[in-house]
Length: 363
Image (cartoon, rainbow, N blue to C red; front, side, top):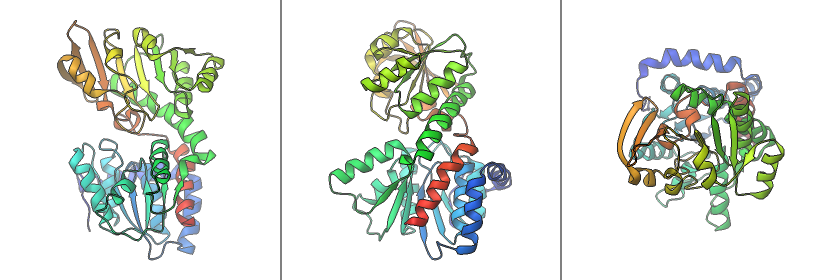
């Protein structure tokens, strides 16, 4: 067996997690029953770069039931559930993933997936596709899928430049993905990540959300449900107006930075919270990101301002400013719902991964 995981001895615990997820993913299990009979992937190699969670494990098992051989890497250095990775490895999946990968290890794992010469790719963030297009690989790929908004944005840019070499289905654009996974899944799991990382009381806090797309909208509703006073920052005027009509305060980040207690970015853009914002934040402000990449909070700017840094909890770094204030960064600015918690609940990922399985079958 060919795999790289943290501890293969965690496999039994991982199998229990997979069973729990399967019990809460009836749509994907129904698809698996059909795949088991029809074997649509007989002789097909699938290369996947996805968050290695129990829900992803159910998807991988479903593809295997359809006859596929699967190679899997993580789509984020901090999102892997090590128990699940071990369980999949024992079952014959070529899985290369563990929580806490370095940047070099992360891209090496993606390269190991491509060495299996997949004919179909599955991506979450487009790192696998980007590496495949780097010029180092000469693979015959017939099609692929993309799970998330950020990845779709990257792929559209590649397509616009005429360099995307094969068709990719934007699974994120399915209504049964973005209007459920992004809204309800991100909303709940982001709150879960913040709570597990900090255990702070949300009631009464000024909770600033950058971005009022599907993810921001779901998060805002759930933060309000916890008693937080929600503030939205949004550069799109129509989305900003929707936030006003939904009953939230809307203001530029320059103003929100002065009043916020907790900040969460959910935009897919770079440097949404920057140096000039850090400089006016309250003492004790908490910074988190629920976008795919760790670029929404300007980490370089934060490093330049700090005079001290302390890892004060497992997922919390304390940054001491020159004037004595302290700012708290969660999960190194990576997506807090997967780095500090378990990601989206199984029930909502059931719809997303059903879309994935059927899209791969279509390819």
